[in-house]
Image 1 (cartoon, helix red, strand yellow):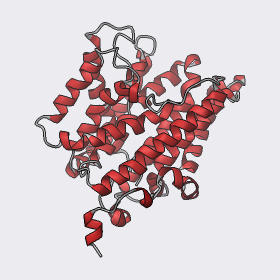
Image 2 (cartoon, one colour):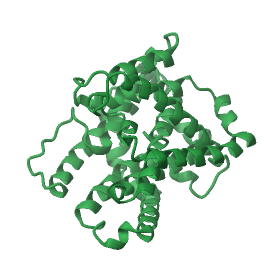
Image 3 (tube, rainbow, N blue to C red):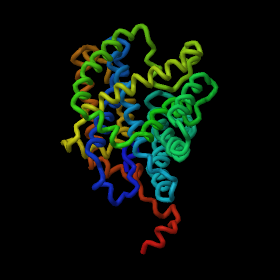
Length: 353
């Protein structure tokens, strides 16, 4: 099971049940993640890159989180599901939180940086958030109006600068509505975005969104799309936090719908790579962090159009390579271990023979 993707209740039937649409969506979204990270050092020198960066951040993580919520609908905290949660989310979090801390001690010249499993570093926040969201799934599937409640929680989070860094709770709470929305969706909702008229409308919507992002570059702090700080921490009045929560939620959902409208429904050359998005997500961060420290962005030509295009293509190619089966086989021990020795066999498994 890929953490950044489907969570089928019966692993033995996973291959037969996989929908190529969702694997395609995960692959394309993870490529956007890599491209967005590759653009980070280029933002200060280019208004166009900053506009594209803002647009990408409005789409990629909301899309991932909605899909993660959709495939968490069957989570009931059964023994097999708890095992998969621990081996597919918690263990990779511990391994890569430690690895990133040790790696950035060198790249950031911070030899005293402490290893803290409570304060997610860089990309690992998503694993911490997914752990919390998935554990709360039974709550959201039983309460009335779960989306409204989660939006209320996200709005209140923007008013609370004292939440702290434990498990990156600001992000956990502010991104929560996207996960809860995914829990509320049904297959027919995804059929709606596949309709031809939606595909046609997606083009002008993205063009208008890009124009709006370009206009907003000197007028708007794109850090709002990170969802990791309160209004006060972003230098905004308190009332702006709840307003921005609702506004960005509406904008991101519109763009996610447009993004999904253009995702191929059939099997493609990259469909199989959708099962390896967890690997690409966690591994590409080492290159994204190292590239800045190793001076890959220092040449003057990298700051020009040719350099920006080159950086974009390299990021997409590297992410594609990291999602391939050979890479997954090498790193499966850290991301999808069996670890049967660590768990008791539940009564269902004992009765099955």
